[in-house]
Image (cartoon, rainbow, N blue to C red):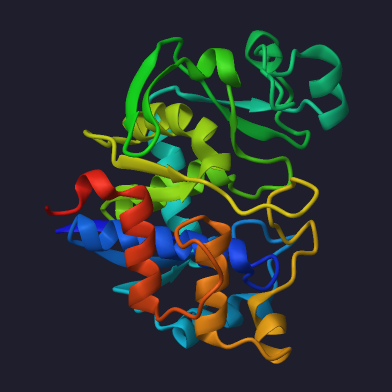
Length: 292
């Protein structure tokens, strides 16, 4: 059985960008006969809120999405500790006390503004009595992987980001680590997510390999909805929530049609059922996979 997942973070209410992502997940799941899991990625304790956690399954149910299972990262702390011990046993981790200021002062950054860590704390072991993060020793090798929509990529995560953190200085597990553990434990064989996360793929492949994964999942990165400014829809940009739009009088079908129109899967705004919205995504973006 093939599994995929829809994995929002509860740092705000769901908005149109989440709705489009869910449509892509279910469109791909239908084509590849996969079951969909809902994972609420609440690893960032400083930003996750209970009301947002509770709202996610409620909002998705209103639109008609059904899931094989529901999980929260906050319930998996013991599991993350177990996998961190596996990495320690393989000598794949080391402590790092570099502050954010020091990171940006002493390391180059990539085109996305991300630090490429040069390994200061690996070369200069730190006093473990201080606050420290845990970094993964990123292997220096090229990863070749195929995106089902975007094609072939060859990337070296050592050059992209250097040694990256799996746990931060305030003892929170990072996105990169938690998602690899979750995908391994939940038997996720198809990862469908936005193009803004594409650059995480090579580093997640090498980390998953170190965690014991034999074969990486299939990957599909979809286009994003944007604000008029060109910025992607996001909670940080205060994008209007689906709840707010429904309260202002739009129907479920109106929002599904609006999102599909903004994603260019239908030519003009028109109400759509969930099945119609999913098919419009398939027809526009997955035509090569549709049965003739």
